Image 1 (cartoon, rainbow, N blue to C red):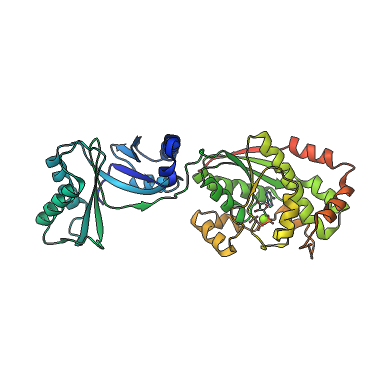
Image 2 (image 1 turned 180 degrees about the horizontal axis):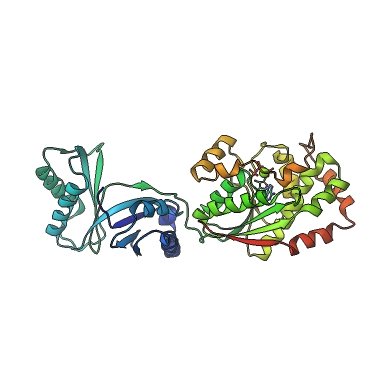
Length: 397
Ligand code: ATP
Ligand code: MG
């Protein structure tokens, strides 16, 4: 394969951010640099108007770099680019012709040349340059190249900036916004399929994420906890390092089990999870909670149940999957590589004390009335759960 030494990064929505655009560009540069830390090679990442470039010095792991860049939110396209270090048009033309010959040897294709001039000092206009280049390519490779301006097999793109940048292939990026441009959220992360996907999706909008997991030892095992840590590490490939708060929920859960109607267990338990998550969120400067809920998926996710759960929160609760079908969620979890870990069969604290017939249409009045029975010691248990939290820093491996 042809040896490229640089990438031209086209960014997604950052382009429309007006005066604050540089903040988004700087965040993107930072995220791109971070993503390449573990990739073999030395890279220089820099901005140019409307673009970010990654230039490798010497040998580097091309596939590893592409894989890493595909995980950076904010990138729409990753374009392997060939650089001609000159602004002399004859040198650039020769560079394009030679490059196309080397990058696509023996390949037959139709093409269209697209030229963009960031450097307006040049005597020729972009269409003039495109026409001249087209002619040159045709005369040099007349046996295998032809022009098709409507539906070409390949666009041959030339951007003239401080130098000439030539590229043709565009690899689709993750889109969204660079992490760190939107504030921080606390994501409720269980070992299931949905919450890693919702965490990924909120981060894709530029949100920095922390996570909280509730476990109930000895009813839930060490292995179930490890599964959540493993999931957080996979999601961290996209979001950057995740601070995971692990909260011991056993006493609260047992108390609810002993004192409240069993068909309301899940709802009351979920209300306590949300309350604790909110307290941790506020302590850690998070502006919202995030869950993997989807309307109607289970009894605790009917609209009535969601209303009852939501009522304990003062922070906004974002539910990126609220209108998604299960299969759509599964498709994303496969794409981001969390699926295989999510389906490992370890118990979850939501499943150990479940009622056979949980309420599907709880009312706030009824639930609040049931919760009065917890009053003798719930504040104490709640405080202890927060005080004894364990923190695991989950980094991508
Ligand atoms: P998931 O696949 O994310 O576990 P689920 O379909 O199993 O979702 P529920 O168990 O009802 O659904 O949980 C709904 C949401 O509540 C989850 O997506 C997650 O955000 C949060 N949640 C549930 N259990 C826990 C837990 N033990 N720790 C942290 N958050 C949890
Ligand atoms: Mg679950």
